[in-house]
Length: 90
Image 1 (cartoon, one colour):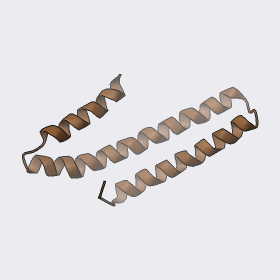
Image 2: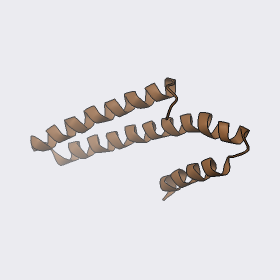
Image 3: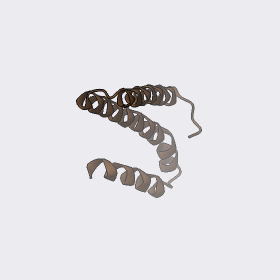
Image 4: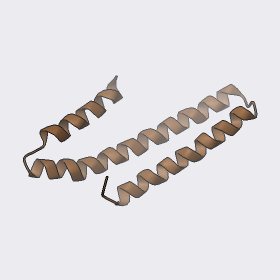
């Protein structure tokens, strides 16, 4: 990813937030906190990571995929996106 954009900054901020949550989860486990509370925090991190991934994919589609389509070389890029999307629906 060579495009530093608002989308990149948004993804980085989401990932930093997720990292903070993971650190908090580790502390919760070390402190033997209530399992359901730990699980809720893990689910929150999963949501943040999903948003970060979608942000990165949005950036990829608006840059790399658009460039590939304009150069009539889109098959590879579209196949990459399809493989990623397949993991979401499995």
